[in-house]
Image (cartoon, rainbow, N blue to C red; front, side):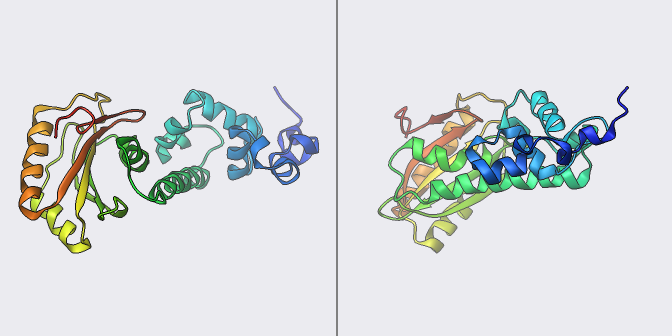
Amino acid sequence: MYTNKSSFTIKSWNEDDRPREKLLNKGRTVVSDAELIAILIGSGSRAESAVSLSKRILSAVEFNLNALGKLSIKDLCSFNGIGKAKAVTIIAALELGKRRRIQAALDLKKIASSADAFEIMQPVIGDLHHEEFWIIYLNNSNKVLQLSQLSKGGITGTLVDIRLAFKEALNVGAVSIILAHNHPSGTLKPSESDTKLTAKIRKAGESLDINILDHLIITEKAYFSFADEQML
């Protein structure tokens, strides 16, 4: 049993081992994921340092930051030393990183491929536990005008109102759109309903002179493109 409580406080460590000082003196790139989380949570518990606690949390998700981002407040609070305030801080930081990635993707001059569309949509829906259907609205240079969630469903599906999709397209002046939805199951194979819905939306777009460039099925690490597979 440990008796020296001070040995677990970051202030008692060698300066080179303190994550805040390490970031200040050596730069952000040399700081490990665990050390960054330790900076966020500020302190550990009586039994372990903030860095040790952070390593334990990362170990539970196999050091995968995407998996860490899926943890709920309740999940994080299950770790001894993590309360609601620290859990919220971790979730907020990961959400900022996610939004930064989305913004970086949106700053593209234009969408030139299915991979470009995937880079935009994966942070939005790639790691969700339920299904969502989104639309990327584009101008005549394939520059993103707007991202819109069309519907939100359950684990196995979501209902899509095609009229709302094209109403928004007309509102923003889009000349083309890209459809995207996620498969929480991880399968990339389009269902029969996915194929029928794509054909229905494409047909509706023809009457309005709005082109359907692609329909992506997105999972955490990969995607299926109707355009790449010549299914449009």
